[in-house]
Length: 374
Image 1 (tube, one colour):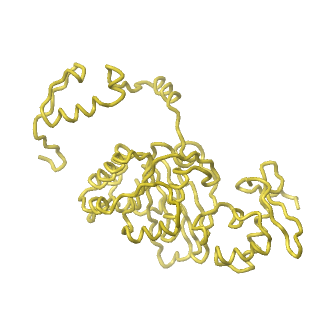
Image 2 (cartoon, one colour):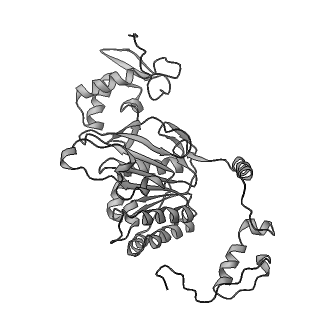
């Protein structure tokens, strides 16, 4: 028998045209059938679900079941998403902030998020003790209700000898908690020791298993390490993900975090691949060391209204940068525009300094002046 052949404890039931409620089967199939018959769609109807089988039917079905976005243009319900980047590019911080937005609602990546979702984190890279410290920094108090894969199940995942086995443990946990969104750190940990991450068949199997067994999924992945000749220049593109090319081809959405200078607390977030619509422009994000949050467009924007002298002082405490960099941030802040082209920021004298106030939500990217404009 081939290694991947299925061995049955008893012969499977013979196919029949009878309604499932009239089928008599032996164990273990009776229990499986009982679970299937308890599904709401079978309780309400004597017919099995019918899937569209023509182009016209599929178009009609699609209109009746439109695409739903948890985060517009970014997180699609039922999709598989991959975020990749080099070490220390704030991928984990980004993921925690995403969970927070999906649970509580608010704004994320300049997009309105309704929230109210049941989400869970499968942290396979860090031990529970180390991860708890990261969580305490992010939520010093009043943490939202977000499930975490318990330590015993984490160990059970890591003991599995096949990618399917590892995913099945996470899937059962997600089902038991009725989760709608799950993040896994990291994609590499779904490959047991000895599995070649460059094998396309293994990578495709992981994504197939994930699509069939997990809710909306967000996977963190590592970029290839740079050689000496490329030090200091982080390549951009989905080809940088460690492993098979399927890592970039199979997911519905692929994102990248690029941190070109490890001395600075900023990264560029890019939509490397989208299956629906056009990829938005890359968005700069700044990691605030006081709030432990990533903020878009400009590092001082979320602090307004504030005196200019206070903003310069805040740049030091929040981003570790001196007055020269603070003034550069201020100049960029004052260039931001509203949708109608007017300034997004207003400044007025306040003693020996100025009060900087936000007028409205700035658009991104900021339109560049036409040739000849001052």
